[in-house]
Length: 384
Ligand SMILES: O=c1nc2n(C[C@H](O)[C@H](O)[C@H](O)CO)c3cc(O)ccc3cc-2c(=O)[nH]1
Ligand SMILES: C[C@H]1O[C@@H](n2cnc3c(N)ncnc32)[C@H](O)[C@@H]1O
Ligand code: SF4
Image 1 (cartoon, helix red, strand yellow):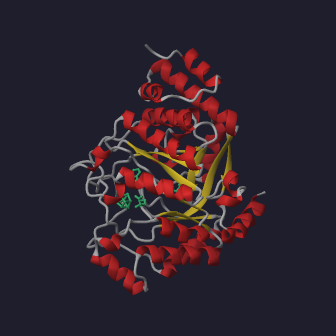
Image 2 (cartoon, protein in one colour; image 1 turned 60 degrees about the vertical axis):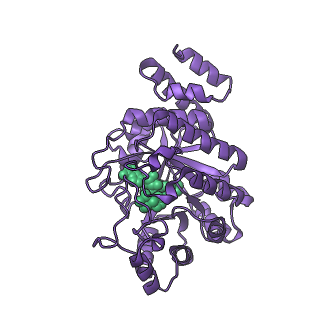
Image 3 (cartoon, rainbow, N blue to C red; image 1 turned 180 degrees about the horizontal axis):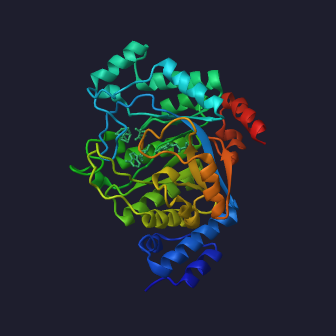
């Protein structure tokens, strides 16, 4: 039995949240049912968000590309003996941040390998040379430096952090995030995407999401699709995020990201998800997470079709940089902001800049550390 477009739209009009069995079916929808799914999700988005689509103007700061994990999809992490292995110096960090500030960027995205010093002597040596005992201590110092020297708002995407570490980063960052990636435990098995990745154990990532909620940290998470999970496991991951957000209310955006193959990874020959799979996942995410959630998909990972994600219910393009590459997907250039604005408007929407903390979170005192308040307000006044 299929859900008729009429029933699906009717169910939405009634305001009833979508249940898991319906989501399992819709994520595999084809033909007219897929069209109805997109329309329902897009209508829900537009009802709550209007026709405003946002992005954050950012610089990417890949503090270290050493990592203790071995994700099969990752080209960012480098082996210690790879000539491209690198831990940025203080001067390099400041130079990138200053260049960003000069180009109107307002976010400094710290995205880095997870606890490399626990696996690689090379990481311990790099840190010792820089005068630090751990990646976390160095990250904290560099985020503080960038904030105080340039005013850019740090967003911290540094893998698994303890509650104490997140609490220590809270006064010097506008927001933090980790991708949940997937809830599938199967992916930890030999040959799978997360084999050899202690930091990709779903329970560990879900626990960090909850602790960030307890700490009232505006938080980014999301799923990476096409890494060996089933469509039903995608749905389960989205419900896990929705459940945690229902308890804590701190998830400010959910990223739906598509796996992109590249030559030098374990998954070099792993198939990529289609733009149609992205649209079905985005639309189901919108129906599960509701009209208020910010749903983000990166434009650079689907350069010839990203405009269609607007028809499936996204309202955000994420961070876009006029200065730095996407170091996670270095082969995928950011669209120029003029092109992004043109595509967005061709689909009937308008493009607006936002900060690393969304306005609805910046407006709530409990989500803004007192030390961050003035930094955030300075940009808000400039953008108003
Ligand atoms: O340029 C990127 N930015 C990534 N970002 C940053 C994102 O695009 C935005 O700049 C920030 O989330 C602010 O909204 C992430 C942030 C997270 O908290 C978690 C995961 C990601 C993943 C990426 C990514 O793959 N590439
Ligand atoms: C920073 C985030 O980037 C994502 N990520 C890592 N490698 C890839 C890839 N090959 N394609 C798309 N996304 C990727 C992961 O979800 C990680 O958490
Ligand atoms: S995705 Fe993150 S955790 Fe996984 S190998 Fe790359 S840098 Fe490490």
